[in-house]
Length: 333
Image 1 (cartoon, rainbow, N blue to C red):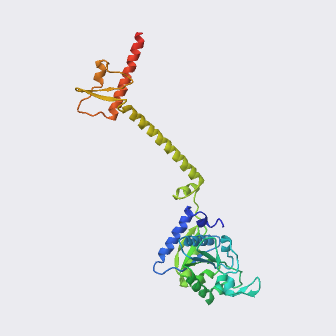
Image 2: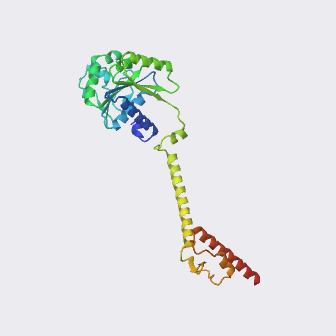
Image 3: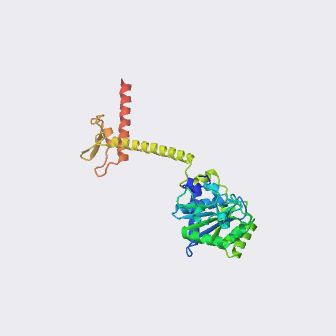
């Protein structure tokens, strides 16, 4: 499968999501009249028309629609290379009933021209051999009958047409399809050319669903930040580092909390009520016979509770007082 089919190869990428958005917009534009045939065209070659057509067909197939992709660019069709199927027999062979390679007439059985792709629900009719009169084949009643038969067999027919500025093939098809999408390229398609194509399609009675702007340059940094589901190795490693950092911070916070709890547990700090006083004692340090100066420092009113901050402050005072006593004893020695 070609890398061009990004909607199939990487369905969680931002580009694939853009194609799904395009699919949704096309469906909502045709809520009154059920969309059965859709033409994709452009103003000039190399604007990404075939690439947009192929990926749009993939997204419709992924939505559970039975899709037939018809390559109507019988002059330079390339859908068979994108989906890696046989180039013939194709549309030109069906419309003409003739195989230029063998020089023989071929069957009109439509099943001989529809090929399966690797993508479920998606089928393709390639362009076939290059005929001398593509426009005449497309304007024939056989082309109209083909679309009618395909509409009975599938949910949606997507047609990859020719660029409208060079030939009139797509203009002819726009008359017999339900809607048309025009693909343009950033800083490549001229506004006057686009306006001319829109006018030509409307003059023949065609309906335009919208215009796709392709080849917009996007920086790598903006690409990574543009979509939640974007999967890149650099972002994955960065997320892993952030997770490790968050885990280490959580462990450090838990350790500090546990240390604080140990300092104020009953076995390490006992509150003894004696008349109007509360006295904090620690088993490892016997301070029951400390001078009254120390007792006055930790005197607390009976009506108040001992908070965590207050208890910690008292313990710090006790430790400081004991350090001073040790220094005094060492200096007396």
